[in-house]
Image 1: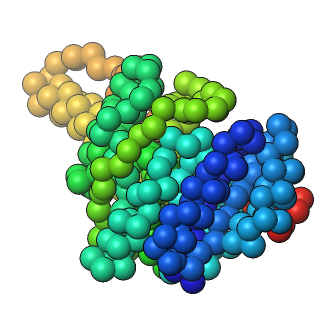
Image 2: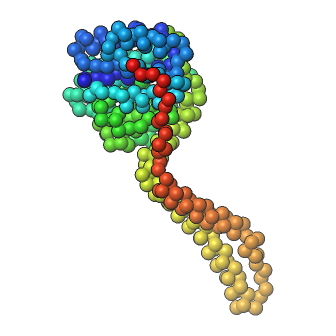
Image 3: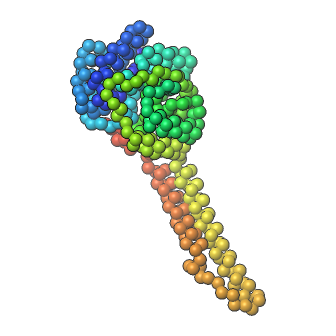
Length: 322
């Protein structure tokens, strides 16, 4: 099979007939063998009934319905697991992504041998309240990930080699950082393509401001997991060494200071007063630093023993499959 189109959706009943018809036309015009995987993320507006109806008229349409709303990452991860095409295309269901971009995305994956092509909506039809935070997140992601050639990590329109989607795990809010996940998995040939961003035709956006907070936390998580996920002791151990050394140096300083005063008194027959160790603020700094150092070491050891991924991280309740 040439192409799998994975479409996560939540309450998009109005746009589904037009979207699937448009995709089918593009596939027919270019003689692609294909499948359309519609992942209903717990919709309550009749989207699943529409998917059932559309699949009866087009055997290429497949559907997956979650019992409740899990989020876009869950929908994509489940769609990736079911995809059979050599090239996997993802797009949003709101008609803001154009299926006419598919042939060029497919060409660049198959002919130019890219692992991943991410869309760039250079001209957006979103309010400033959405575009400005997006620019800030993209800049932060470029800096932390080292993927300098992408302008828009969160664009829903992307193309992947099949091997990419079969070797990454998407969860939480990490759908916006899939290029980063791909890079950490060893797929480093990542490109970008300017794509059309259409104004929303039906309904309203499903994302609020909380996605930016969650997105930032997931960015930190990706950075840590990607760099230290297989060797957490390198992170916790390094921090533990620094903390322990700081405490050890403070303790040596306290001992040296007291012994110096004692030696000076004995040599010069004086009686210079000196503080008890427990009256010195450095004593408590040293104590805390040493304890924290040991705790970080223990955290590193435990992290090495415990598997990073729980067995049920991506265990979603699927009600029906077409």
